[in-house]
Length: 230
Image 1 (cartoon, rainbow, N blue to C red):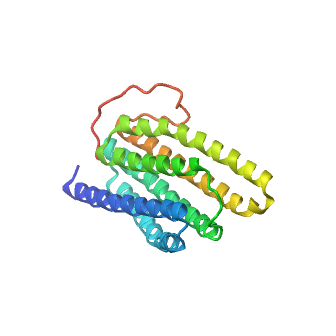
Image 2: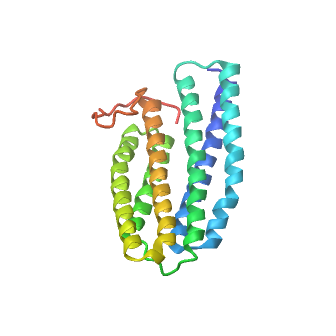
Image 3: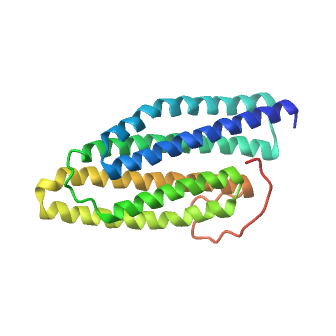
Protein backbone atom coordinates (compact mmCIF):
# COMPACT_ATOMS: atom_id res chain seq x y z
CA UNK A 1 0.00 0.00 0.00
CA UNK A 2 1.31 3.48 -0.84
CA UNK A 3 1.89 6.03 1.92
CA UNK A 4 -0.59 8.32 0.21
CA UNK A 5 -3.35 5.70 0.30
CA UNK A 6 -2.61 4.88 3.93
CA UNK A 7 -2.84 8.58 4.84
CA UNK A 8 -6.17 8.87 3.02
CA UNK A 9 -7.53 5.78 4.75
CA UNK A 10 -6.48 7.14 8.14
CA UNK A 11 -8.23 10.45 7.44
CA UNK A 12 -11.34 8.63 6.30
CA UNK A 13 -11.34 6.52 9.44
CA UNK A 14 -11.12 9.66 11.60
CA UNK A 15 -14.05 11.18 9.69
CA UNK A 16 -16.12 8.05 10.19
CA UNK A 17 -15.35 8.03 13.92
CA UNK A 18 -16.59 11.63 14.11
CA UNK A 19 -19.78 10.49 12.42
CA UNK A 20 -20.08 7.71 15.00
CA UNK A 21 -19.92 10.29 17.77
CA UNK A 22 -22.46 12.59 16.13
CA UNK A 23 -24.98 9.83 15.48
CA UNK A 24 -24.61 8.32 18.94
CA UNK A 25 -25.23 11.76 20.47
CA UNK A 26 -28.35 12.12 18.34
CA UNK A 27 -29.66 8.78 19.52
CA UNK A 28 -28.92 9.61 23.16
CA UNK A 29 -30.71 12.96 22.88
CA UNK A 30 -33.63 11.41 21.03
CA UNK A 31 -34.28 8.76 23.65
CA UNK A 32 -33.85 11.35 26.42
CA UNK A 33 -36.38 13.60 24.71
CA UNK A 34 -38.74 10.62 24.56
CA UNK A 35 -38.30 9.57 28.18
CA UNK A 36 -38.45 13.15 29.49
CA UNK A 37 -41.00 14.29 26.88
CA UNK A 38 -38.75 17.26 26.22
CA UNK A 39 -39.50 19.41 23.19
CA UNK A 40 -36.21 21.28 23.64
CA UNK A 41 -34.13 18.11 23.40
CA UNK A 42 -36.22 16.87 20.48
CA UNK A 43 -35.56 20.08 18.55
CA UNK A 44 -31.81 19.71 19.16
CA UNK A 45 -31.94 16.26 17.60
CA UNK A 46 -33.77 17.44 14.52
CA UNK A 47 -31.46 20.44 14.05
CA UNK A 48 -28.35 18.26 14.13
CA UNK A 49 -29.48 16.00 11.30
CA UNK A 50 -28.29 18.34 8.53
CA UNK A 51 -24.66 18.00 9.63
CA UNK A 52 -24.94 14.20 9.68
CA UNK A 53 -26.41 14.20 6.17
CA UNK A 54 -23.58 16.38 4.87
CA UNK A 55 -20.92 14.16 6.41
CA UNK A 56 -22.66 11.07 5.05
CA UNK A 57 -22.23 12.41 1.52
CA UNK A 58 -18.61 13.41 2.13
CA UNK A 59 -17.66 9.97 3.43
CA UNK A 60 -19.38 8.14 0.57
CA UNK A 61 -17.73 10.38 -2.03
CA UNK A 62 -14.32 9.87 -0.43
CA UNK A 63 -14.76 6.08 -0.45
CA UNK A 64 -15.71 6.10 -4.12
CA UNK A 65 -12.76 8.35 -4.93
CA UNK A 66 -10.28 6.07 -3.18
CA UNK A 67 -11.72 2.99 -4.86
CA UNK A 68 -11.45 4.63 -8.29
CA UNK A 69 -8.04 6.28 -7.91
CA UNK A 70 -6.10 3.64 -5.98
CA UNK A 71 -7.95 0.45 -6.93
CA UNK A 72 -7.17 -1.12 -3.55
CA UNK A 73 -7.13 -4.88 -3.15
CA UNK A 74 -7.73 -7.44 -0.44
CA UNK A 75 -8.20 -5.96 3.04
CA UNK A 76 -8.14 -2.33 1.94
CA UNK A 77 -10.92 -2.86 -0.57
CA UNK A 78 -13.00 -4.81 1.95
CA UNK A 79 -12.53 -2.04 4.49
CA UNK A 80 -13.67 0.65 2.06
CA UNK A 81 -16.70 -1.36 1.01
CA UNK A 82 -17.59 -1.87 4.67
CA UNK A 83 -17.22 1.85 5.37
CA UNK A 84 -19.70 2.66 2.61
CA UNK A 85 -22.24 0.29 4.18
CA UNK A 86 -21.59 1.37 7.77
CA UNK A 87 -21.86 5.02 6.75
CA UNK A 88 -25.28 4.34 5.25
CA UNK A 89 -26.46 2.61 8.44
CA UNK A 90 -25.33 5.61 10.50
CA UNK A 91 -27.31 8.00 8.33
CA UNK A 92 -30.40 5.82 8.72
CA UNK A 93 -29.92 5.80 12.50
CA UNK A 94 -29.81 9.59 12.46
CA UNK A 95 -33.04 9.75 10.46
CA UNK A 96 -34.78 7.40 12.88
CA UNK A 97 -33.50 9.52 15.78
CA UNK A 98 -35.33 12.47 14.22
CA UNK A 99 -38.47 10.35 13.96
CA UNK A 100 -38.19 9.48 17.66
CA UNK A 101 -37.73 13.16 18.48
CA UNK A 102 -40.90 13.99 16.55
CA UNK A 103 -42.82 11.38 18.55
CA UNK A 104 -41.34 12.83 21.76
CA UNK A 105 -42.69 16.27 20.81
CA UNK A 106 -46.12 14.78 20.18
CA UNK A 107 -46.13 12.86 23.48
CA UNK A 108 -45.08 16.00 25.35
CA UNK A 109 -48.63 17.25 24.74
CA UNK A 110 -49.92 14.32 26.84
CA UNK A 111 -47.87 14.46 30.07
CA UNK A 112 -50.22 12.11 31.94
CA UNK A 113 -50.21 9.34 29.35
CA UNK A 114 -48.92 6.11 30.98
CA UNK A 115 -46.03 4.93 28.81
CA UNK A 116 -45.46 1.17 29.37
CA UNK A 117 -42.44 0.40 31.57
CA UNK A 118 -41.04 -1.86 28.88
CA UNK A 119 -40.43 1.24 26.74
CA UNK A 120 -37.62 2.30 29.09
CA UNK A 121 -36.15 -1.19 28.83
CA UNK A 122 -36.28 -0.89 25.04
CA UNK A 123 -34.48 2.45 25.23
CA UNK A 124 -31.67 1.00 27.34
CA UNK A 125 -31.34 -2.12 25.21
CA UNK A 126 -31.34 -0.27 21.88
CA UNK A 127 -28.78 2.31 23.07
CA UNK A 128 -26.58 -0.51 24.39
CA UNK A 129 -26.77 -2.26 21.02
CA UNK A 130 -25.70 0.89 19.20
CA UNK A 131 -22.79 1.51 21.55
CA UNK A 132 -21.56 -2.08 21.31
CA UNK A 133 -21.94 -2.10 17.52
CA UNK A 134 -19.87 1.05 17.15
CA UNK A 135 -17.26 -0.24 19.60
CA UNK A 136 -17.03 -3.52 17.71
CA UNK A 137 -16.16 -1.60 14.54
CA UNK A 138 -13.61 0.65 16.23
CA UNK A 139 -11.69 -2.22 17.83
CA UNK A 140 -12.39 -4.79 15.12
CA UNK A 141 -14.13 -7.24 17.46
CA UNK A 142 -16.35 -9.68 15.57
CA UNK A 143 -17.35 -11.49 18.76
CA UNK A 144 -18.67 -8.26 20.26
CA UNK A 145 -20.56 -7.66 17.01
CA UNK A 146 -22.08 -11.13 17.30
CA UNK A 147 -23.31 -10.25 20.80
CA UNK A 148 -25.19 -7.28 19.36
CA UNK A 149 -26.99 -9.54 16.91
CA UNK A 150 -28.16 -11.75 19.77
CA UNK A 151 -29.38 -8.70 21.74
CA UNK A 152 -31.84 -7.80 18.98
CA UNK A 153 -34.17 -10.60 20.04
CA UNK A 154 -34.69 -8.88 23.40
CA UNK A 155 -35.61 -5.58 21.77
CA UNK A 156 -38.05 -7.34 19.44
CA UNK A 157 -39.69 -9.07 22.41
CA UNK A 158 -40.02 -5.81 24.35
CA UNK A 159 -41.53 -4.12 21.31
CA UNK A 160 -44.22 -6.78 21.13
CA UNK A 161 -45.04 -6.32 24.82
CA UNK A 162 -45.24 -2.53 24.44
CA UNK A 163 -47.56 -2.83 21.44
CA UNK A 164 -49.82 -5.29 23.29
CA UNK A 165 -50.08 -2.94 26.28
CA UNK A 166 -50.80 0.06 24.07
CA UNK A 167 -53.58 -1.84 22.33
CA UNK A 168 -55.13 -2.60 25.71
CA UNK A 169 -54.91 1.07 26.71
CA UNK A 170 -56.69 2.11 23.49
CA UNK A 171 -59.43 -0.47 24.03
CA UNK A 172 -60.00 0.61 27.63
CA UNK A 173 -59.95 4.36 27.01
CA UNK A 174 -60.62 5.72 23.50
CA UNK A 175 -59.44 9.18 24.63
CA UNK A 176 -55.94 7.75 24.92
CA UNK A 177 -55.81 6.60 21.31
CA UNK A 178 -53.85 9.60 20.00
CA UNK A 179 -50.98 9.47 22.53
CA UNK A 180 -50.97 5.68 22.32
CA UNK A 181 -50.45 5.88 18.56
CA UNK A 182 -47.52 8.26 19.09
CA UNK A 183 -46.08 5.88 21.65
CA UNK A 184 -46.64 2.93 19.31
CA UNK A 185 -44.72 4.77 16.59
CA UNK A 186 -41.86 5.58 18.99
CA UNK A 187 -41.60 1.94 19.97
CA UNK A 188 -41.35 0.89 16.36
CA UNK A 189 -38.64 3.48 15.76
CA UNK A 190 -36.64 2.15 18.70
CA UNK A 191 -36.93 -1.31 17.23
CA UNK A 192 -35.59 0.05 13.92
CA UNK A 193 -32.61 1.63 15.69
CA UNK A 194 -31.81 -1.81 17.07
CA UNK A 195 -32.16 -3.33 13.61
CA UNK A 196 -29.65 -0.85 12.18
CA UNK A 197 -27.24 -1.63 15.00
CA UNK A 198 -27.64 -5.28 14.07
CA UNK A 199 -26.94 -4.49 10.41
CA UNK A 200 -23.82 -2.56 11.37
CA UNK A 201 -22.64 -5.51 13.44
CA UNK A 202 -23.08 -7.81 10.47
CA UNK A 203 -20.77 -5.54 8.49
CA UNK A 204 -18.18 -5.71 11.26
CA UNK A 205 -18.19 -9.49 11.09
CA UNK A 206 -17.72 -9.29 7.33
CA UNK A 207 -14.85 -6.84 7.78
CA UNK A 208 -13.05 -8.94 10.39
CA UNK A 209 -13.80 -12.47 9.22
CA UNK A 210 -14.79 -12.00 5.58
CA UNK A 211 -18.00 -13.83 6.49
CA UNK A 212 -21.45 -12.72 5.29
CA UNK A 213 -23.86 -13.51 8.14
CA UNK A 214 -27.03 -11.85 6.89
CA UNK A 215 -30.02 -14.23 7.13
CA UNK A 216 -27.84 -16.73 9.04
CA UNK A 217 -28.50 -15.76 12.63
CA UNK A 218 -29.65 -19.24 13.53
CA UNK A 219 -26.26 -20.66 12.58
CA UNK A 220 -23.59 -20.65 15.26
CA UNK A 221 -20.69 -18.38 14.37
CA UNK A 222 -17.26 -19.67 15.39
CA UNK A 223 -14.95 -16.88 16.68
CA UNK A 224 -12.04 -15.97 14.44
CA UNK A 225 -9.11 -13.63 14.90
CA UNK A 226 -8.11 -11.98 11.65
CA UNK A 227 -6.40 -8.59 11.36
CA UNK A 228 -8.22 -5.57 9.99
CA UNK A 229 -7.93 -1.83 9.60
CA UNK A 230 -10.54 -0.79 12.14
